[in-house]
Length: 254
Image (cartoon, rainbow, N blue to C red; front, side):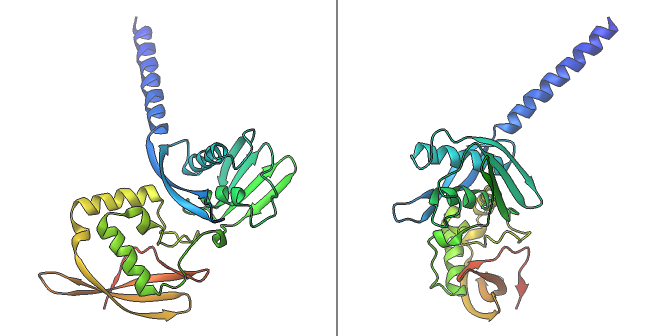
């Protein structure tokens, strides 16, 4: 009887563990995908979908299905495998997506840019039965305002956060893969929802002057509080000719 009791406990434990595993694999996650716009640029879209194994796999599966539904790629294209090693995501497809060498291949870079939206993904390697192709994030197919100076882009990003438009705010943050402090959109959204709900984004502020050294700009921001004004310094980084707000772990007092 004791053996049966132990067996029953083990069976129940495996059942509960399996249920928990299935629950973990099906929770909702927010991702950013890049769909093909009518103006021959890629357009970022906010999507809530089910988590599938990893953030890289979730994004890859979603964007391939999205491109199929839009008629941008062959319905017979299938994702056979995906893995990540040392900042590189390797995906295997059963066939190629148009001309694999063209920078203007929007369907191809829709996939590449969606995958590299995941933090710490530096390159995407696509393998087919015809060869292996390596890609970096292609920012030339993204519409970004090159006319904004560091103070302007920081103010715009902070205004979006104050308004609760976290998606627009996130798109003004650095997408440099080598930045160890970069967050996924899902993590950033959850963090900002908590900050927003506590009323911290209601703080009045003024974005002031900036100093540029190389591709880094330091921007002065003054926060107005009943206890007195607080002056802090934030960083912006220039990526391919566009100023973006850098990911920071702390700000320095002025």
